[in-house]
Length: 71
Image 1 (spheres, helix red, strand yellow):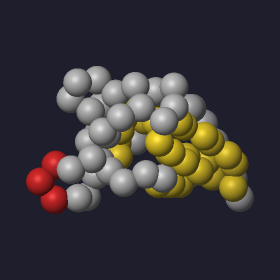
Image 2 (tube, one colour; image 1 turned 120 degrees about the horizontal axis):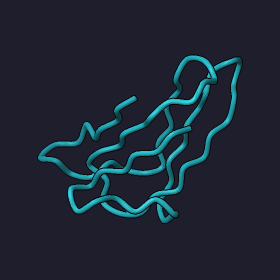
Image 3 (tube, rainbow, N blue to C red; image 1 turned 30 degrees about the horizontal axis):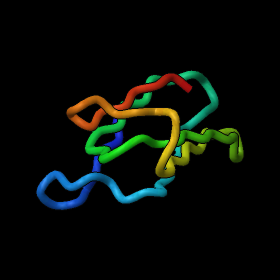
Image 4 (cartoon, rainbow, N blue to C red; image 1 turned 45 degrees about the vertical axis):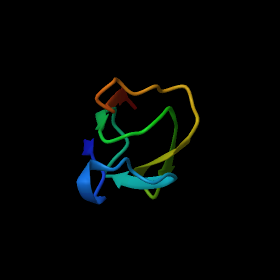
C-alpha cells in the first residue's frame, strides 16, 4: 500500500487521515509527503483494515518525508 499527499507543490499531507485496505493480512505500507512524526493506529472494520495516521507519534519520516511499516 502506498499513500501520498494530494496537496499541491509537494506539501505534506494534512493529518489526521485514514484509509481502508481489504482484508486483515499483514501488508507493507509506504507513506510519502509527511512533514513530521506520525502515530499509526489500525483497527479491523467489517473484515477490512482501517489505518489512521495522526500527528506526533513514534514513526519519524526520512529526510524525504517517507515512513514505511508493516501492519
